[in-house]
Amino acid sequence: MILPIYLYGQPVIRAIAQPVEKDHEGLAELIENMKETMYASDGIGIAAPQVGESLRLIYIDVNVLADKFPELKDKRLVLINPKIEIDEESKAFTREEGCLSLPGIHENVTRHSRLTIDYFDENWEPHHEVIEGYLARVIQHEYDHLDGHVFIDHISPIRKQLIRKKLNQIVEGKVSCDYRFKAYGVHKKKR
Ligand code: NI
Image 1: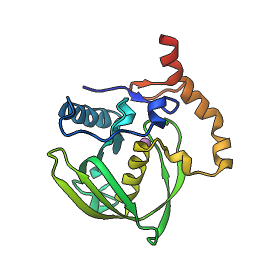
Image 2: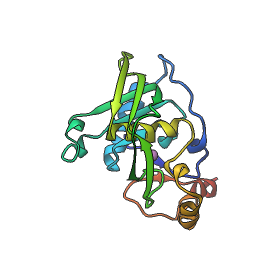
Image 3: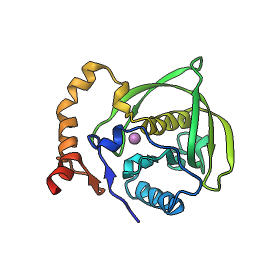
Image 4: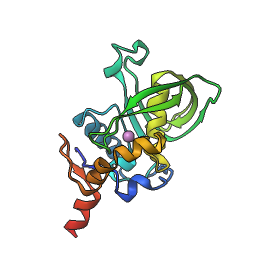
């Protein structure tokens, strides 16, 4: 089932997400719904808070970028309760990012290129991996969502000022995008 995307301004986007319990009811279904929702909105990563679930759960599929980054071929990851350690010694790169919860906004973000991650997959198999390059960026972007952060938290105050109006429009739901969404403003009006 395709779920609506919760936009910037919704409290769940700023909340610290809770760890997923092994017996969490409907977990498999939630993972399937997150996949469907992400593909339907042409995303490469989605975190559970973006579908309104304050849980430490992420789905990533970066296969679509394999032309540019061959190492991303068939890279699909379900990350349950991930813990990351960013290698602060690794080289930092600046690239443009976007986010399903911030439609129409694209800003340069500088991130380190290497990290270590521990997580459980959808079968609760534990993984310990060192990730480098573009995938390390995607993981950091998605991981931010679990701690109530979004990519524009990493941009300069001046850049943020320049997109202030757009941000307000997102909060109010005055955006056009190809997927269903729940904005804070719209949400309030419905009550
Ligand atoms: Ni995002």
